[in-house]
Length: 444
Figure 1 (spheres, rainbow, N blue to C red):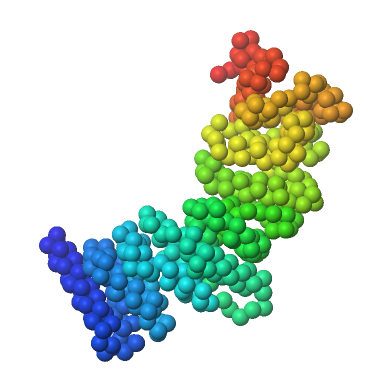
Figure 2 (tube, rainbow, N blue to C red):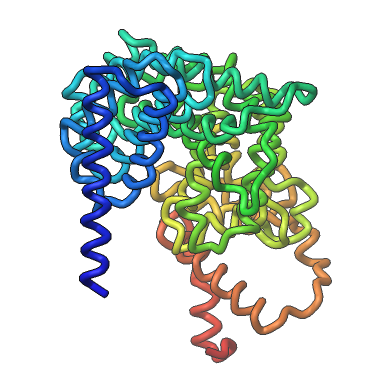
């Protein structure tokens, strides 16, 4: 059986060598028709998916042959078939990427992206995307001399127009895949060269437009939604390029669905980019958009019938996650967003979320809190400053008896809140869980 596998691999290598030999020779003598060239490249693409067959493709000469077909040959279908072979080779073998650059085809790839063609967009965006990993690619030169930013922005504007026009003809079969490759390339370029982000500012409104018209997948933070969010996360957002209230509502809806769809263990990685984007938006948003966002994410007056953080509303779930010990990145992002939506004012922040939820963030960031905030009348209202609940609701609370599981969760929550309070040194309080255990009122 092992011998048979070796023989099959040997045949595959020999076939690849023969195909490349014919293609290389035809670059000189031009005896093959366009259809014959395409057929040879199709066969090479299939065989080249197996790395065991592909040593000659990965070699400098093999990459050079594919580059000449991909970027120099006039027949579009032949050229695109060669680009498919190149993209596969560059994915499978890192050294292939540097060979393409050494042969001078990085610049030609960027120039090829100017074509208004979805197959070209998909293939060339992927090739340049792969060049951003472990090569000497000069992204600044591709942007400044070869219009890479203009090409990406133009392609994304086309996708925004396509999605906005519901009466348009059926989309090109590659449209969605090409858009995703453009988004991935945009993210990598701006992540590796943040100083180039300003060159892509023009596509920010198109990115928000594309996102607002996407049918959300389940769970929501997967392609293309996460690709759009990741791309926007690196962008410079101004008041002129900020999303509308409707588009902001869509982002909050994605956050709401994500909190329900993903287990807590996955949220730290999956949802943090979205929180980062919402923070960027609120920083530059108009007063109306900012107020709208605060209304969606901060507890409202109705929530004060109970201690804040109880219930299944989005603000309540965010508050609970903001003190989760397992979500190091997400809890910081949530608290920072709610603090910023509170005008970055500690007094307003405590009023909005309760001192119990605010204490850890304020202490970590060494933000001083007026001692007067710990009085019940600190805001001129009948609100418990620690829990955020209305004092009148505390005395008239007629909630049904909690189950043992609910009591355990509440005890854990109170433990974390009061430990944060003690750590700040602002008030001298004893953790009620410790007190209950000492007095024999807590069953472990």
